[in-house]
Image 1 (cartoon, rainbow over the protein chains, first blue to last red):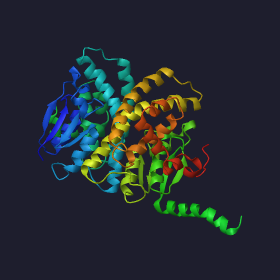
Image 2: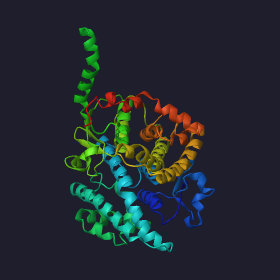
Image 3: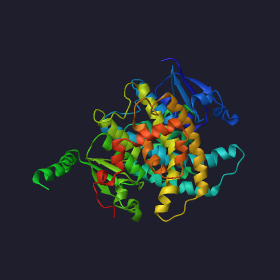
Image 4: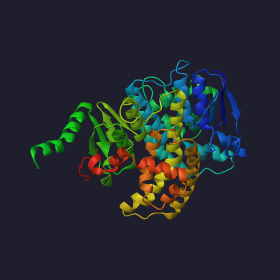
Amino acid sequence: MAGIKVFGHPASTATRRVLIALHEKNLDFEFVHIELKDGEHKKEPFIFRNPFGKVPAFEDGDFKLFESRAITQYIAHFYSDKGNQLVSLGSKDIAGIAMGIEIESHEFDPVGSKLVWEQVLKPLYGMTTDKTVVEEEEAKLAKVLDVYEHRLGESKYLASDKFTLVDLHTIPVIQYLLGTPTKKLFDERPHVSAWVADITSRPSAQKVL
Amino acid sequence: MDCLQMVFKLFPNWKREAEVKKLGYKVHGDPFSTNTRRVLAVLHEKRLSYEPITVKLQTGEHKTEPFLSLNPFGQVPVFEDGSVKLYESRAITQYIAYVHSSRGTQLLNLRSHETMATLTMWMEIEAHQFDPPASKLTWEQVIKPIYGLETDQTIVKENEAILEKVLNIYEKRLEESRFLACNSFTLVDLHHLPNIQYLLGTPTKKLFEKRSKVRKWVDEITSREAWKMACDQEKSWFNKPRN
């Protein structure tokens, strides 16, 4: 059980995805800070952990992994007897969870991350938010949230009536967007709004802020 | 043709129709779509029968009802397993690979949590690092010309540069491992096939050919029987008309 390490940055959405999963499971781990603004993620020794030069990277004893959604799934399965259940294994549930993970990964995250970049990160780096991009991406996000709104009208959480990785994966991007004008897109959809309030108030989500 | 010959010719169809009825699998898509082919590849690796249902992409059928009730994101393919309707090709392939894990080609690496996590990691790499430049290159060089649109060579150049970096990492990986996730063919390699197949018919082909391990891997995965069947419209889409 000893020897879990996360190499990342505390503000990175992908790093937070992994940290939230570890907190859900009440697991101890060591956090190794990778200084992104110094390009540490693009140089040795980090580049040996992830040749694609992105945070986070992960270690559990001798076992090494990268890609946040692969890490969260490993944590969910390997530590399935610890803390909160994050996946369920009936074949219909596998279908719903696999599809939910893909939807977050291909439809929600690309758009959400662009909005975080424009409105939260660019200002931090002294760059100007491009309002045209924000408008375009908000239009796309609205369509995704309409699908989520419909789904959450039928089900308490995205994949089932229980909180799973599908919901967890959205938390870091949502947390940032709630501090921007984009928040209105979540507020104006009642089921999405209730779900956002629920998942962001989980202790694991609070711990990464 | 005598009676016996006729029966032997019809038998595979009857057998298939019986299985289709029993399993009730349906694939809504287009036999030339990369995402649809990803799913067909798995069905053929598992020797599973299914009913193909054409969605007319050229007339925008996927962006209107009733298709939107199947996939509100308006994309093919959609897979039906009885009452379960699934979309996102990589969710469909994983579902089929799990449910039928004891049948046909083994496409997962279920030996341990670590081997499965490594496989999941490489599936993420294909989806987040390989697919973005590869699918843009397929779009520009293969699909746009079909619709009478002009290839944007700047976009091609930019994305080839990105793809080169990814393939350098693949080249290193394939020095240590026969396939990407482990020493046997898995979903990870399969997920790459649709874009690779199209790109082999474009100048981007050279990026795969100039890296010896990548070239060998590409040769091996594209020559699989199941993949060839997935690309053969007669065998995979049962000669149902596209329009």
